[in-house]
Length: 228
Image (cartoon, rainbow, N blue to C red; front, side):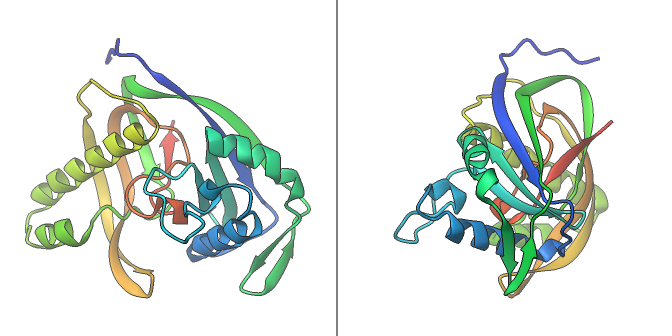
């Protein structure tokens, strides 16, 4: 049994799903485009871009995902308040010109804690994790043993968790321990082939369900779920 006396940070979270609609996982960025355009005058955090088109370089407080074919919007803190304000006005989805009427919405609210856990948790990636940038991709491809690759990916996942915590103003003092069990995949991203990963990891930190880790989390990549 682990113990942690370090202070925790509480966050508010909303999960909005449209269970009657089924989309491919690759449609997540189209959800982002649709809602970012639909509510573009409401708040820049819905698209994570400023009015001049430049990116907002901060952890996305609204994330768009397709989880097991179900369109899903995740709001954190300010993003959670926005989704609560706007969900009643969402009547349809327009994905590539196909109109999906929304007759059923599943809205759930959570309060979660960030920080050290009292026991080890297993998290699975419900969408592919893109943990490698151009620089560390080259380093990863030079590794030949599975153990070296696991250690390398563990360090990147740890950095992702630290970045996520910092994005939500949580300063974790406890050492973060991560043991990944991952499988390589080739996926299309912005018309380029990218290396991504599926699988699970064991960790000694509290991480909320549905949030994203790694690259392009606002587009649905790296969504996690804690297994019981």
